[in-house]
Length: 453
Image 1 (cartoon, one colour):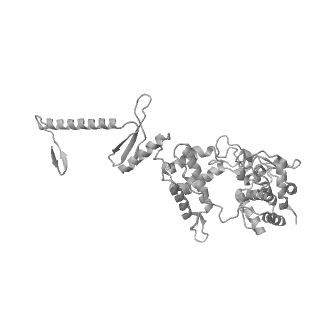
Image 2: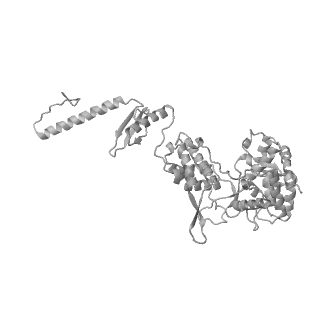
């Protein structure tokens, strides 16, 4: 034994009858030494301790020893990886804490892109309307996956959500072609797109937490973008009245539709899907149990095939025309019977006298007698507001106008909730059953919208 450069070393002497025999003895001693080292390491790794080794490609791998199976067989955690030994040590420490808290070890290899593909096919369809699911797919394919799809679901952080927002705000998409040059026209995404993509990602990550693919939803830690910036949220009483009066003077064939939207608080699909047989003029009520929705079609399906819609089994719907169908509103509270204000009933009866019959009994159709598309409805509403020279609000904000006007008239929250079909208050504070007489009295506050000058 000797010291050299501050390091103590020793050697042993091995003898053999030949060089070949000596080599065999040395190899046997090495194997025995390795076996002893492994046994020492095995004894040293008690339950919950980690083992770390380096693969041939230089990747450092770590695992934890877990409580043995009931049959006594060894059980270990899923491996954690890094090219840095210190990082693997930190990962194992974090994994120990996770297991001690009773949480599942996450799959660190699952990318957000792969999770979103699975989510769109296996989870979202069961709880999402077909039209909304189509929109979800668009946001996933066009914004979320290109921006942060490479990130791991288990490691998704608030900064990744903010990176998604930034990516969308800086990106552009093709919106038609230049008529002169034929070159594609690229325009920036709206803030509404940022808001919608955030909502889709948040929904997917909430399900990832439920499915034990992530421990938290980072979207909940980042304020959702406000896609309504730059536009009004509701019309005032004076503005709403101006729109209706201007529409009457212009003989707008959809004036009763605008009046119904403002006075009933119905969603766009609920109003456009209204049928005459669900309006009871004698009782002064109407039934919003169905809504008009444009559903995706199966590839190659004929437009008159009753099974043409690409929807999940058991999805309740009534085919109308091409992609149009009647479906149930979003919640049970939305399937509601509401009072029909007398001024609205009066103009609806006038409308019925000039109404062009259609096979489905829809109150409002296009000039050709077909169901009104969402786009045509939006364009008609925008024109009605331009005609009245008011600051425009979107079709979906007509409900906000109704709710705002009712609140300004000091209508109780529970009554507003019943009329609007909200599941909560403001969306309304605490549901209580409201009879039709209370709702009728509340909607009477909106009669001024159709008052003749």
